[in-house]
Length: 129
Image (tube, rainbow, N blue to C red; front, side, top):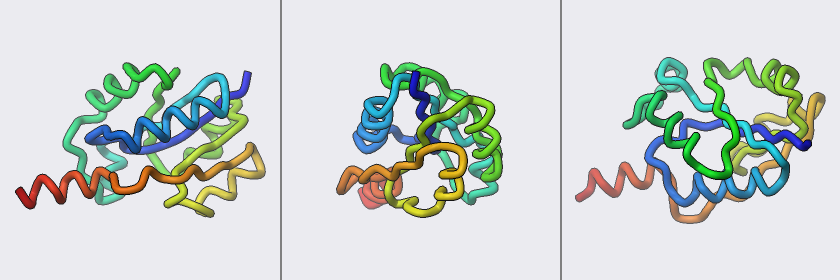
């Protein structure tokens, strides 16, 4: 079984998120999503509309997602990859190169983002109305 891991905040779920999750799942058999906790988002200076608990329930209801784990720190990725026996680490290509250090432990792929959509754009568009 090929195990795939990705991380994100996944707030204000949109087609870009779904595309990433679908493509990640297509690359393996079992998709694990590391979901940024509210306290980690504070560290990242990122504000989510939905709480961690609500974002987790939303992600768990998506057919491509097999398991959701909390992301508490930047540094936990190596431990997660080893502990969860990950074969493939996947992120959007806006992170290209940032996680190459994981290549020592698993394959790393950066997938193209869905053009024209992002949580930041959605928030900006709503604010402008």
